[in-house]
Image (cartoon, each protein chain N blue to C red):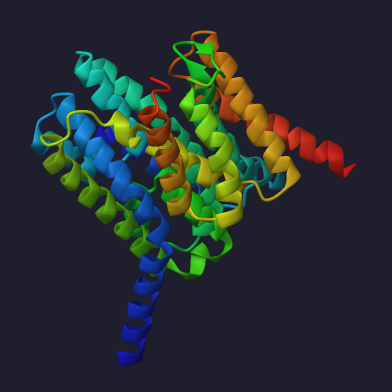
Length: 233
Length: 98
């Protein structure tokens, strides 16, 4: 009994440690979100609740932007849904490694699956089956830091008149750069990223302001797969 | 918002976990992470107000030119975010960008 408790604690500690890079990214980004939400006129309670029960960085940023522009709730919800569809592909790509997990653990794991936690899990996906506690601890730590950043941002919102001089609006893009570089471990993946990024940009230029991400992802991954098969032959 | 965020994350893990997917589907799913990250990132770096803008005033693009090698060398999320935000802040301090 004692031994297994020790092992559990060790797994939780490892999960927290692995989450550290996300924590360092989430606190300032959560902070930026908290400040922006305050500037956009979202109440402090709603700002915090979004980080607690929605927990989707880019969707929260987009929702705050739409809210500030006076968009109605239905459009906000639809946009959020489209923006979040990419998580369906992410969750699907992890699912082969989640065999043997109980349903309630899967439910909890999925709730805290974000771009960043996904990126970390996918770098060690083959181990996921054996380190459930570590993976869940990583997720919980990540969300806790997101909520902490949000609270700091809400507090600071009244004190900061403009976020631009601090470059806070670049936090999300910089984080994506780091995660993308971490994913580009071979040539096929680099090619896939370039194709997908190019298609997303072109689609956006063509006026697809919501579906460009999911469409470019599907096209990029498919073409990337084609490149992979072609180079292997 | 919570519902439309949660469902896409939950359903695949609930229904696909433990199934033996065809190798080609697994290979495709492996390419999803770089594809989706690039799809989210590229427009935010290259476009300003619905057109491609790579001039000195597009700080996001120029900061990215530094942030990419920093991410590559350091392998650190924190270092990349700090350098990226720092460069954008610095550029604006000198009157560049929006």
